[in-house]
Length: 183
Ligand code: ZN
Image (cartoon, rainbow, N blue to C red; front, side, top):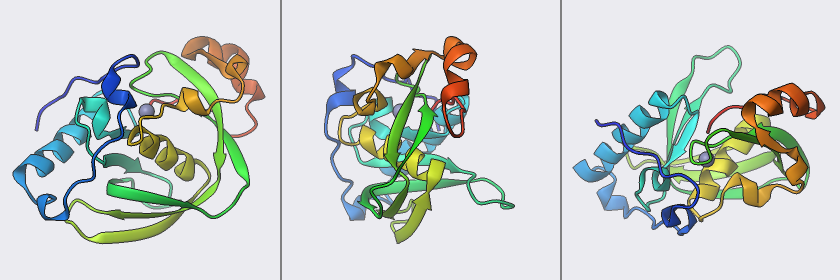
């Protein structure tokens, strides 16, 4: 495994649509090494999720720290070629940050109940539902696979700030989960 350089906003790779991983290649050394590098890089930069384009690989791979199940230990979740289905029109607003947009935090409203279909790191098909902040993190990461950043999803740029100032002035106004975290 190796630490990889994170692409930041302005780098065209963050605006590309990532290619799906051919299923027979999931077990390959190339993809397994990529997953390992993504995990190492995510932890190094204190992210809670990372998409492959963020380390200059335009492939549909997402890693995330899954710590949303109450009473259960956190574990890593790998989503390959993920598909999202929205199960509600209702949205929740959370503070989002991004390793590719360093130093900033902003409020984004996203549908708060989704179904996810993806392949895991072993090439097994997985399907699960996510709600609340977990649904937001998945949508944020999957947006990276279609060339979108959370800033594109913001309705009101007055709700964007440098993370420190966000914490001082804007966090109180965020209705739920005012956690400025990198993902
Ligand atoms: Zn991000």
